[in-house]
Length: 169
Image: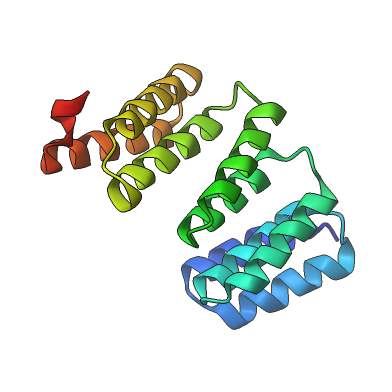
């Protein structure tokens, strides 16, 4: 049996919000292999959804130990740190994602989210908006056929126009 099957099934159960079964499936996946980082990512997601950020962070760290080259782990960690107010740590982790894969459109989406968050929640510095815009535009260049790149960019522009912030860039 492959842990991939358990992880995929857990995604379906996650959509159904059957969290008890999600955890069971992911623990079964760990019994098959404790080296498959997506299992740890899904466990992190599960605990973050349920408000246990500490446990979520620990699973992200385990995912990193399983595969330190997987950029998506760094992106999830950066997002978690940002949401938890650990801004400098979030940026350090995001920088590591850029080092690992500077041509990954998801890194630029996450960077756009980072600067957009700083602008909307920390300090209304127009430079943050310009950096967000630059990163979202780069994400589209790199992810021409990736809907989430366009969605993130559109969400950013809509919010900028709603708040009048679009006048600053």
